[in-house]
Length: 232
Length: 303
Image (tube, rainbow over all chains, first blue to last red; front, side):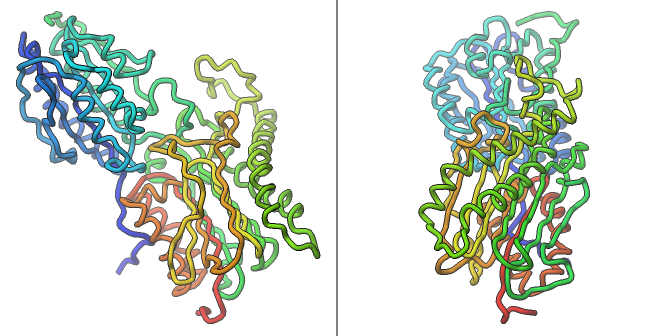
């Protein structure tokens, strides 16, 4: 019989990945919400593959939706191979600040231990916040894991408030990704789901004062789909 | 440390449990490093005055893995060497004067005021000397906006450092950056030295010897050696604790190693430890793991 290793139960390091999705009424126009649903659903097999290639990170996925208020769309931190995507529906206003507050509640060191890998937060929106975004962002950034999270934003269409999304990202050299058609949205969602997830799954250690962009080195994002027509 | 698992025993692998202080160290390349082609960037060093007697110095270091730290394995090796040199050759002769009683209050004050700056300064001197001998290649590029003198750059050597100085009169623990120190009592109870907590150590970010004014981030714990002296002191890089779901599961390592040494002997643990660490890294963090152990056993524990 193989000898028991010193210490208690072993475990890979948790990596929390959270979609933060705009479900306001405008997302129901010109197929935006369905394009987002399709893009995330298509990305799942790629995420499963990346998670499988990085067995020392335990990828756990959740999703928050916001319109009139905010609530968890997938509340349980779900292992990647068990993650399923139920379609989002669009209706209401854009309470983005409340979504950030909801996420902030989960980024406390009591619920996300110090051994975790920096979480990945992906904010997707086509509009302007209708609630107190600053309060939500403040709540997020008051959490140590909020400041250390990899924060990515995708702007859907020209009406998206890029300045607000830029504040969410918090790094001047990292801009929101602009998706003006379904093909571009698919590209960006896939990039986040693969390249960003890969980097976040095996981040090398670095000093506190050394991160010019994020505390996880990010690969360059893809270009928008070249031949697609802008419809948003 | 090289890419192969490394183990060392300060009392020789053939010797076994007995009186006095003995040591074991091991360092293994993490499975994630093997997958990515990165080397083992940890280092360990042990110094003992003579035989199984005190004083004893243990040191481990964890070179940073991000792309900017191209020489972190060298920085880690210099870190453990610097710790041994400063503690054994600079600090001890100054404190332990023959035929003079030790003033522990004075010792603590000297350590607090003098030690962090000396360790950091010595490490910086040594890596800068290394740079002068082996200048940075064009590939070891500077980050945008860094206009500093190339020969003065410390970032590529970035590393943590953990060290322990164990004497008959006191135990001194020093830590810069992440990683862990455990002490294990004779009955297997595991404790941690009372180092100040550093809330900045989260995820993959750490304080480092390469940071500006790094001595401000050095944490010290000083304990007079009275009462129940630990039977085992363990220093480990963070790849070890990050392999467990809960810190308590990691702390169990200290008790288990002491029990294994007593039950199976020093040579057996020394031989098996690298394999245990490889298995732990594979099922846990994937990171390099380096451990330095100092322990003492009593005659009735001889196998």
